[in-house]
Image (tube, rainbow, N blue to C red; front, top):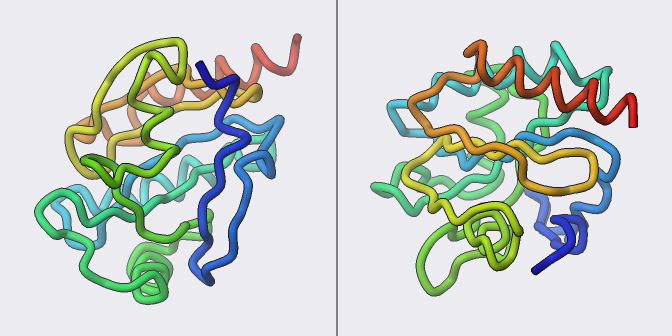
Length: 168
C-alpha cells in the first residue's frame, strides 16, 4: 500500500514534472477532465468550488484524458486554453494521461486500487469523476461524473475535510 499520493508526479502543461507533494497539507479534488464531453460544463462549477475554498487550503486538479470516447483530442496547451477561455478555469490543469488500461498513470493506479490506496477499489467510469483527497494525501471520497461539483454532498465533504484537518 502506498502511504499517500505525494510521491507521485505529474507533468504540468509545459512538460515539467511536478510532485503531488507540492500540495501536501491541502484538501484536493482530482478530476479527470475532457474538453468535448457532455459533462464539460462542470468546469465552471469546479472553478466556483475552487474559488470558494482555495483560501482555506483547497485545490482542484484537472487531469485531461482522452480515454472515454476520444473527448479530449487537443494537446495540453489547447486543452488549458479551452478550459481558461471557455470556462474561466484558474485551477491547475496537468498534462493528458491514461487513466485506464495498460498505460494507466500511477496516480490512477493509486486512486482506483485498494491495494494501493488502502480504502477502496473503484474504477474511473467516465470523464469528470471526482476524487477527494485529505491533507495527508489519502483518498477519502469518490464522486461519479453525474454528481455536479456544486452538489451539497460534495460541498459538505469538502467542508468536513477542511474542518477535520484544521482541528487535528
